[in-house]
Length: 377
Image: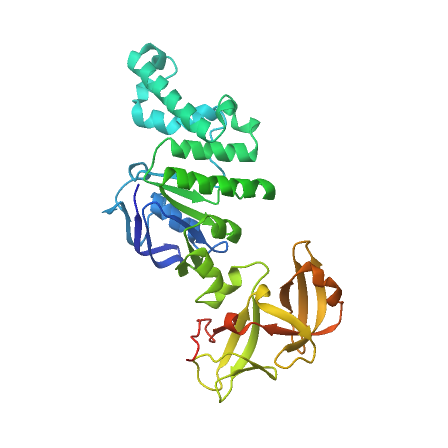
C-alpha cells in the first residue's frame, strides 16, 4: 500500500501541451478519480504514474520515493486498461497467472517442455495456480478459468483483467476507463463491485473516467481535469454542491446546471433581465456575472410571482421517479431545467406561462473568467 504524489507534472506531444504543471497528493488506501472530458489529459497522467509515458517536467513519488527513473515493472503498480489487454491465445487462468509467472520464474522455466521437467518450475506453477484460483474465486470467475477471452462476456473479461491486477498485490491500482466497454446495466453492477473491491483490499486506487456517475458513486475524492489542468479536487458532494469553477459546475450533474447572465447593481444585488435575484456576490457594481443553480434547487410558480423568473414551458420529461420541466425564460435562448415531483405533471402544461424561483441559498455566482465569487456578508 502506498500514497502517490505528483509534483508539477508537465507533458507535451510535439507542440500540443497535454499536462500543465499538475500537482496532486493521493493518500494511502484512497480511491481517487480523475474526471474530465476526452482529451483533458487524464489518461496521459495515469500513464505517467505507471511509467508508460515519461513526463517532460516534474516528479512522481510512490510510497514516499521518487520513481521517475524506474521502468513500469519496477514501480509496483497494476494497471487495468480500457481494452482489458488480455492475451487472446491464453485461457482466463493463464492470463491471470502471467504477472506471477513473470515475477517468480526464469525465462527457461516458462518454456513449454522444460517447465514440466524441472521440479522447481512445477512447484512454482502449482503455487501460481493456487493463487490464481484464490483471486478468481473472490471475483466469482473461478468457473471461467479454462475459457479464452473470446468466450467471455464484456463483464467477465473485465473481471479477468481485475484478477490479473490483483494477483500482483500492487502498491496501487491504476484503472483507465475499465467500464467503458460494458452496457449500462452491467456498468452499474461493475461500479459496485469495484467499490467493494477497494474496501476489501484497502489499497490505493486511481481511476480515470469521463463518466460522472462512476466518479461520484465510487470515489473518496474527485479531481476534475480540463485542458491539462486540475480545476478542483474534493469529495464528490463538494464537487457537486460547491464547485469553484463554472466549468466544474457545468460538467458535473445530470441534467446540467442552470445558468443565467446578470449584472451587479449599485446596491450589490444581481439583476437578470429585470428580475432581482436574492444574492449579493462580492463584485464591483456593473460587473457581469453568471448565476447557476441545480435543477432540484428551484420551484415552479405562477408567471407573475414577485422575484420569479418569467418564462414558458417548452418541454417536459416524465421519468416516473422525476419530472423535468424545461422552461424558457422570456428573451432567453437556453431553457432552465427543473426537477419536480412527477405528481405535478398536471401543472406543467406545454407552452404555459410559469415562473422559476431558485432557492437563494443554492444560487452560485461566477465571474467573467468562471471563477466562483464569494457572497457579501
